Length: 177
Image 1: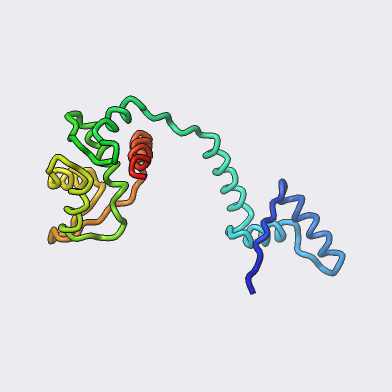
Image 2: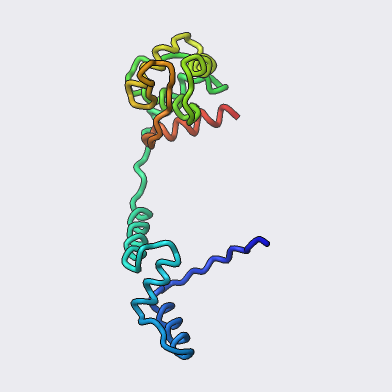
């Protein structure tokens, strides 16, 4: 039989613990207020009440920190290197635009390791200027992809793209659908 998940939220875990402790105390010896706070925190997956407080404070700080704004002019210039179907049609001259274009290709790479032939077929389908070796070398050089010692297997390296790269990835992905 499946179990229904029912979320429980409270504005003040301390008052919640105090009230629960009082109710338990009426039935017999109850845990102290601090013991109750720690039990509730552990029930929610935290080590103790201090861990819960620290996690909540960090979440508040992160929500308050605004994400930096993207340089949309750069994104627009990089997007001009892609056609309406999301294929890279030209290699930009400026290095910053090259890097953004490589991020867009990186986002389409599968997460599992691929042999050189599979990588070549993917890259050939994603660009039209016929230089898959340039794309492979640059992605490895930038740390977006790694190659096994023998040179046969390639693996995408997971990392967070820059703000501009995320904006470009969204635009190119929209063209794919």
